Image (cartoon, rainbow, N blue to C red; front, side, top):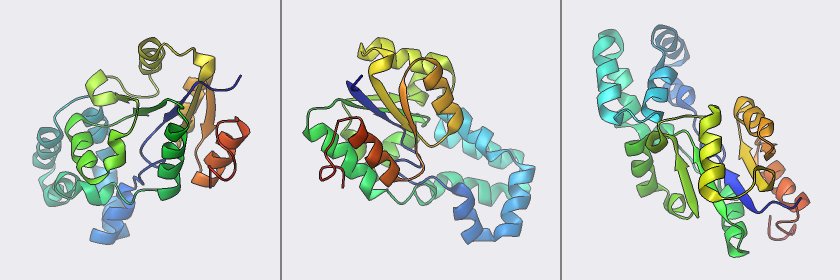
Amino acid sequence: MQPEAVVFDIGNVLIEWQPERFYDGEIGTDRRRAMFSSVDLHAMNDRVDMGEHFTETIYATAEEYPEWGHEIRMWHDRWIELARPEIPHSIRLLRALRSKGVPVFALTNFGIESFDFAATHYPFLHEFDRRYISGHLKVIKPDPQIYEIVETDSGVAPGALLFTDDRADNIDMANSRGWQTHLFEGPQGWSDRLVAAGLLTPTEAA
């Protein structure tokens, strides 16, 4: 079945998301490893992605771990440096699909305030036909509920959705619901998948 709509994850598909890389550059690999072993920063970020307030959640965590307070606050104060750079080829694919009239959705684990902030730096985040942002929905991938929301709200049958994400667990859940999927490991592989699906020509997907 040719897909009727294409669903993009955002982190590491359209924008690189590598907090460890940022901290390696700021405080060195050894201190970064010590901090991440002492503080579950990804769990903190999951709370933001579930809809907790961006600033309040991160600053409260900094107060809970004062020995790492300054570094934890960087997650907020320098957040756009954690979420960069954009992935140009992926953005071209998004725009190529839309130019051909293919509906394009975002399905992303992202906080409310952090997404709004990101959209001021990355205008393409305004270009989706529909956006399913976990912070607003109060549920994160790979919980099946967030996939059900996409199916119900869009009205597109699961088998007619083509979804790309960089995390295998998110892809596995989509597969279990009958979605067409692509594990994102780089924009060229995604480009090839869109061509194979009959949605873009090789020239359009370049």
